[in-house]
Image 1 (tube, rainbow, N blue to C red):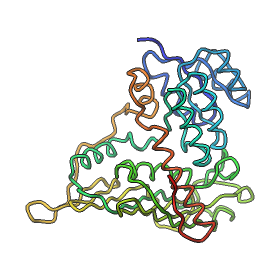
Image 2: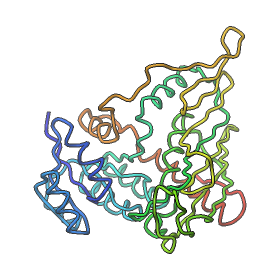
Image 3: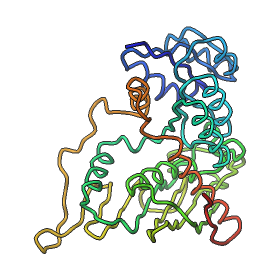
Image 4: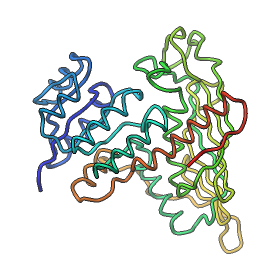
Length: 347
């Protein structure tokens, strides 16, 4: 099998923590170039992971290095152009979540992938968890029946990142909705079979992030640099009548944090944390407790899924088209919050 040559665009925390180590664990894959607008960061990544070439301009890297694939690990505002440039250079793209700053930019990325015939995958990693895969299998077998309502939660009590671009609206596009809410929303939409969203009623709040972190807060942040929401909620309506409630926070006064998806079907319901199925068995109400659903030591990841698709010539498991739907919903929540009314989702 031909060796896959990979370049990294944005060589900071997520690239060094997930992407580069992920690639280096896979046979017949080599990370050959690291790029970052901060030369120090690019050199650090190259030295740490023994990467041969270093760049500060992704266009120069694409021009000078023969690549099969890239990971785009930049802030959200810099997802679109490097991804499009790579696709147009004939290179497959794994882009960190969300697909882009907004759906308009994401659409341009999807269009570029279709135009060039190259793969565009987005790093929405919750689908790869063992319990997510197990619940998807049960749903596909019809164990829950018609799923008509869902609830998705990505809730932190005090979890505002004090590093990176997470609280910079121009670079991130938003707060917990676009950062962690995108994960649980994508997972829940995927479990539901990606019904077509038609309208959203949303609200956002900034009540805690602009205050000094309280004693006991696990994460520290600068309230003077907090520009995004700390809580966002949305009620999403789908074609066919199903609905979904989404709630995402960096900081909220709650008892405990929750990252969870609840699904309600006419044959059964389910939750991921704890992993349970609620149904009827022989005319009796029953709770099903799955056993042995544990994460393997080296579980399948976003990076391995991306590489397998390239190696086997198959579609990527998280295509840009699906990530674009998720971002359209998030855009609509922000728009609804700004306008104070329900908004329709086009397309």
